[in-house]
Image (cartoon, rainbow, N blue to C red):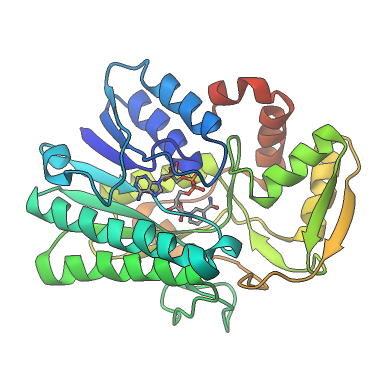
Length: 319
Ligand SMILES: NC(=O)c1ccc[n+]([C@@H]2O[C@H](COP(=O)([O-])OP(=O)(O)OC[C@H]3O[C@@H](n4cnc5c(N)ncnc54)[C@H](O)[C@@H]3O)[C@@H](O)[C@H]2O)c1
């Protein structure tokens, strides 16, 4: 198989690249090294990936690349490139969100169609739901994003669906629920909390800590992506949750246990765009993809903690 991964130097993309290479695929990785966090982290991943002869790196932006040429002979595309993060999607940065998350996706779907790519798996987000009227969140619920980021993720999901409905492009969208594990983005809560536990610094907690999140271990997320490529229904949307919905206060307790260190918490107000609760109903992914998350929060946090505690070898850590 020849697989193309966009966002290959990112947190989830780098894990996916590893798994595809392990499975024997030829992998083309596209990543324009957007400066949403320390580029040294992304560059170290690229350097490591390039040691594998079956990996080809393309260091450009999806908005400007000649995608037709790159997609020639590609069997399947995993589209993970995006500008992530809810809080930073307000104000002037929305233009970048719209470009990286919507326009770039449209270019990729169009070129995949032109080149006859067999399957396009799109990394969507639980943020498309917004503050859901009903929990757990089901794919059939009406999407009401609560942040500009969520709007861009939903727009690209709509594009994936309509390229399927109008042209038969075999797209599948996967709605990820808060993914964690080694190499998690530095702006995300678990990475921030584990780093603070290691360094003895304080954490900022937004809101009262009683908001809930469905945390999903990165290796389980990668498994779901691979299942979607193999047997996802064309044009479908699937939730990818970890089955570990806890409050942020409970998460802090779990991190204190796993690290053996107490966290100093500075409380701040609720951030605009943050939803109160997320909880995935994963029965559709279980029925149609045979996907069941395997990593409990305790187990995943222990692995993530090991990676943070030995950060200098970050690029070498696998899930
Ligand atoms: N991490 C999560 O919890 C989570 C939850 C829901 C959805 N997602 C989605 O999963 C995907 C991966 O997220 P992540 O946490 O690994 O983020 P990440 O920022 O670590 O990875 C994304 C990568 O894409 C690259 N990129 C962005 N726009 C690009 C463009 N236009 N052209 C080329 N490269 C570009 C960036 O340089 C980055 O390395 C994103 O689509 C995100 O919206 C993530």
